[in-house]
Length: 227
Image (cartoon, rainbow, N blue to C red; front, side, top):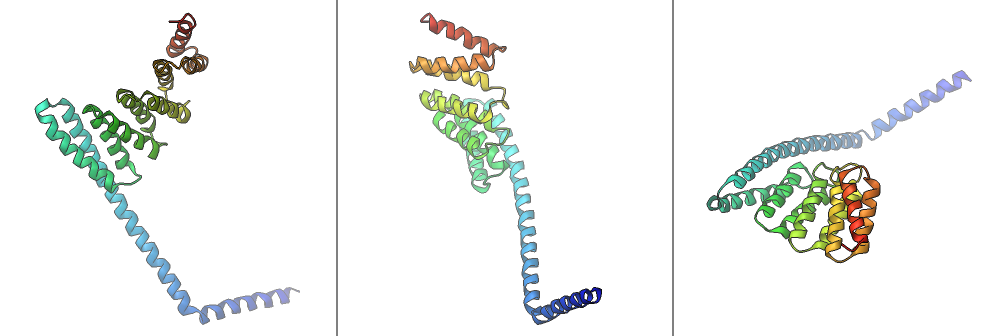
């Protein structure tokens, strides 16, 4: 029995050797192709990493330029804004789905907000929040989007942004209670008292021991007495 097993092993080994000899040219081609693909992949990865690093430096420089813009007088602001806009547009165009694009989108939103272009600001913040929903800037971007939309005269859209914030980041973002209070306020501005009441009730239940929860409870009392 043991002899038969050894014979079978030798037979399998011989077959493998025959297969390699018979198809050695094809195997050499396959191995060569795989090696070339691996080399190309490595080169692309290195180039991509270097480019990302370079644009990370540029977006940090853009942040410094934005800080300079905010501190500048009105006479110099226009030129700085134009320069910053061109730089941010290039960073966004050349970096898809990576850190420099996220930062550039967020900075573009801040710049548009500073210039009073609230709808544009909301668009940039929305892209940052949606395309990079698992990053540290996603929640602040939604807050900024909601604020910009309210200033643009779009309270319904602002409420939607606050709702997305609550849905996506409840339990992980400390600004949720304040966002909920703003939702209630916006509903009141739209004369939707029942929706406002629902938000305040949830806020007072989920954050009863916080100042935001107490404010919600106070607002519920005021609604009950018609204030």
